[in-house]
Length: 467
Image (cartoon, rainbow, N blue to C red; front, side):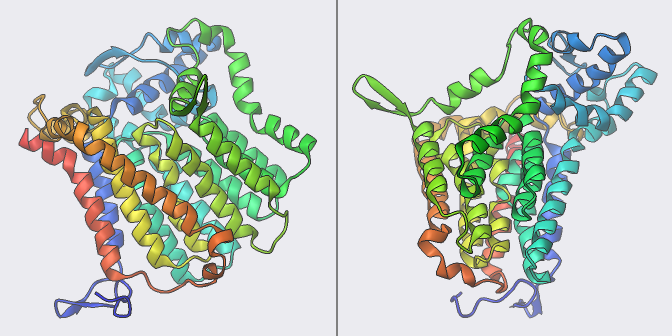
C-alpha cells in the first residue's frame, strides 16, 4: 500500500467493509488476557510469597528478620525451591496489600495459592494495577500537553499494544511496570514544572531496581546546571532506597545472596572497550556522553517537552544498547512511542520503528533466556491446571538450536532499531519534523503490529502443545 493510500484503522475498506475502530483494542486486550491465563514465570510467585511473609513477620514482631525468613521460603506445593529476597522493603508493600486476600485465604484453608487456579490468577494479576496506572499517567500527560482526542487514543493504544509491555509485563510477568508507572508520574511533574513532585516520584521509581536513575539524571541535567543543586537532588532521589538498605542492613547481609545491586552492576558493566591495560565499560561511556550532552543543552530553548521525552528514550537506550540486559527489563521501553507521539512526532515512523524494535527484542529474549518461555511457564500458569503436563517445549528446543547462529543477528537488529529511534526522534537532528503529527495511524502498520504481537505471544503455548 502506498504512503498516500494509507488511512486510519477504522476508515479503510477491507473485504467490502470497514475495520471496526475497536478492533485493535479488542485484539490487544485478548493478548493480555491470554498471557495472564497461560504463562507464569516463577519470579512473580516468589515476590508474592515474600510479600505475604511481610504479614507474618509483622504479626510476630520480627520485621527486621524479613529478609532472613523470606530466603528460606519455598513456593508452595508446586515449585520446590527457595528464593532470594532481592528488593527494597518498599517493593513488597504494594504486593502485600494486593495479595492480602490470598494470604487470608491461605490461613483459613491451609492451602497455598500455587495449588489453586483462582488464587494463582489473583497473584498473577498483581502487575495490572501499575499497568493501569501507567495508562492513567499517559492520559494525564496528554491532557497537560493539550493533545486532541485522536492523538490521546493513539498514544494509549501504542503503549498497551507495545511488544515491550506484552513481553515484560504480561508474558514474563515481571515487576518493572512499577518503575515505569512512577517514572511517568515523575515525568508528568517535570513537564508541569513541579520540581518537588518530580524528585519524589522518581525516588519511588528508584526503589524498583534503580532503573529510574537512567531517566532522572538526564532530565535533571536538562534543567538544572548548578553542581550543588544536582548533588542535593541526587541524594534526595536515592533517599528511599538508602533508608531501606540501612534499616535492613544486618538482616540482608545474613541472607545467602546479600544485596542485588552487585550482580546488577556486573551485568550492566560487562560489555566494554579494551584499550590496552584499560577497560572502559560501554555503559559508562554512553551514560557519561548523554549526561554531558544534556548538561550542555540550554535550559530553555522552547522545545522542553520534546527534549524531556527524548531524554526518557535516550536514557534507557543507553542502558539497553550497552548492558547485558535481562529480557523482562524491556517493559521500561514500552511508553516511548506513546510519549513521542504526545510530544508531536508523526505516528507512522513511530509505529513502524517501535513495532519492529519490540518484535526484535521479543525474539532476542526467546533466544537469550529460553527458560522464560519453556513448558514450566505454561503448566505453572492458571491455564496449566487444565493441560496435561509434560517437560518438553518445541519452542525451547528450537531456541537452543538456533541461538548460536541467530542470536547475534537478532541483537544487531535490536541495537540498530533502538539507535535509529534515538537519532530519528532527537530534536537537535529532526526538530522541524516534530511539528507534524496527528494524522491517522496507517492501517497496514497497525495490522503488522498486531500480527507481531499475536505471533510472539502465542509462541510459548504453541511450543508447549507441540511438545
